[in-house]
Image 1 (cartoon, helix red, strand yellow):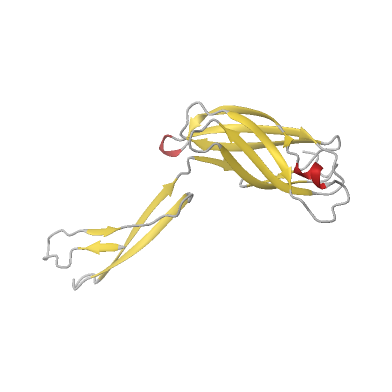
Image 2 (cartoon, helix red, strand yellow; image 1 turned 90 degrees about the vertical axis):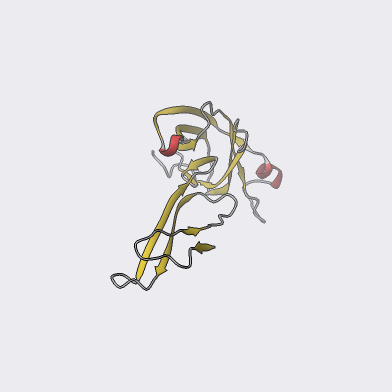
Length: 179
C-alpha cells in the first residue's frame, strides 16, 4: 500500500510511504519501485527504488544437499549457517529417505529410520551483514548405496526460534564422487 501527500507546493517537501507485506518465512533480497507522477515541468515522473535484505532467523546454505560418496563410501559436505545467535550449537544432523513404492533395495521400515551424520560446527571469524554471524558446518557419513537416494536432511539446533531446519537432498550411489 502506498500513501502520499496529495498536494506539495513548489520547492517544498512531501511524504511518500510504502507498506510492504512480506510472507512468513521469506528471506533474501527485496526490491520495490514507486513511480511518482507530478505536474513538475522539469521531471513529471520520478522513479523511487526501495531495497533491503531480509534475514531469516537461521539460514543454511546450500538450499539443496547433493552428497557424492568417494570410492570408500565416505561423504563430506560443508554447509554455511548464518544467524544472529552468538552461541549456536548443532545438536544433530540426520537424513530420512523418501519412501518409494516398489523400492526393492530397502524395506519401508528401513527407509523410515533416520541416518545420523557426524557434524562439526565452527564459528567463522568474519561477521556477515547486519551483525549476523557465519558458521561452518561440516557433515560426514559413510554410505554404500547402489542407486541415488532422495530424502530430507534435518539440522537440529539450540536456536530458540529455529530448532529444526529441513533441507531436501540426495545421496548418490557409491563411487560417483571422489571429492
